[in-house]
Length: 257
Image 1 (cartoon, one colour):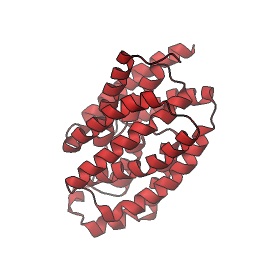
Image 2 (cartoon, rainbow, N blue to C red):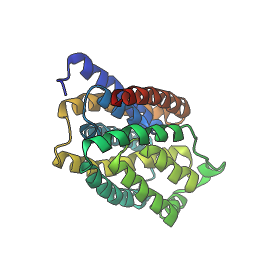
Image 3 (tube, rainbow, N blue to C red):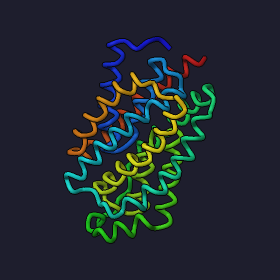
């Protein structure tokens, strides 16, 4: 690929800010950041690894923000983060060995369908906000939620984009948590397993550090701003991201022809 210029790095920073915001309030922000990296010329395998650095940074920033606002049920973290991290280790190791051409096609086709799934809003019970901390722990240790957490980690380790949607489905639709606490748990789980996944891709030499630095700078800012808007704009932002993702899919598919 060609060297990244000032304009391209600025674009990556702006895309990182948008992805950090969207990932924090709902999920699917990596649909945007992965597409940007690929459109600017990074090979799919390198884009997949590079994206893990800003995702890790934005998730840590969002976790700190939710903790400050006392929205993070700390007692439940281990029951979701542990199986997700184990899954992420397996998924990221597998992804790091996938050849360029198959990975590129996966990132184009799979993420297209993940984007479409992002149009669906999580179904939340009306009394979800009344669940106390003990109830949150009971939900997170339920076998069905643990299994979903492992699956989310495995998918997140392999491709990442849209993993927040899977975790919101696990915690809100399957588990029954309200969206504020589900979002808070989602970001800390992603932060935890992203450390595992990023370590694998770094060890494999699949991170473009200049691109990662530019995108990380923006993503941290976007994530911190998003904590205050974790519910209000979620569905509108997902719709915007899906539209951008579909347009990027068309562009990338035309390049493959």
